[in-house]
Length: 241
Image (cartoon, rainbow, N blue to C red; front, side):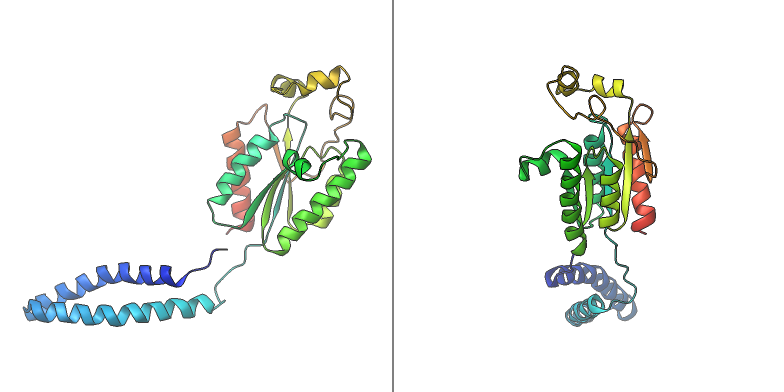
């Protein structure tokens, strides 16, 4: 979470005092009819109360009573390639950033650049998911939430993530495989069909649908805007009250 700095507290105090001092000057002038007395009273009050306000803010900053810690969560987007996971996850991340919570974005393609030479067979994918789970767990230990998008086609690897991290929310981005093919601007489905890509989920490898997803988004029926609204509202109600 963001820390209130000294300069911010002072700026807030000064801005408030302009309003309050103006009110004091008007009141004194109305009651006593002396502008010089009204201005003097306003200036003295300003100097004293800016300092008092600053001290009051710093004391309350140290008091934990009334503060609620936002528990870190992990939004885990899973689905067939080109189902819309990344697009929706990117938008959700942008909206959650606006809430000023510590949050990071993890995407399969970016992680594979950092950890090269990762295979796509079942064993390699499962091992990779444990690495990702460890990364999320480390971020959560520092109170940082995550928005992660991975095909993660196997139930055992998604189960491993759920067991490793706290507050794991599976978002199943559901789409008919024919719809995914139509969105295939990369041409990866065509390559998989012709055998150029091995272990491609939905073509020459399985995609095991989640049985216990917290949120299911059917991109054949729900727009990106609607999906983002559903997911963000879920997070607000459950974790940011």
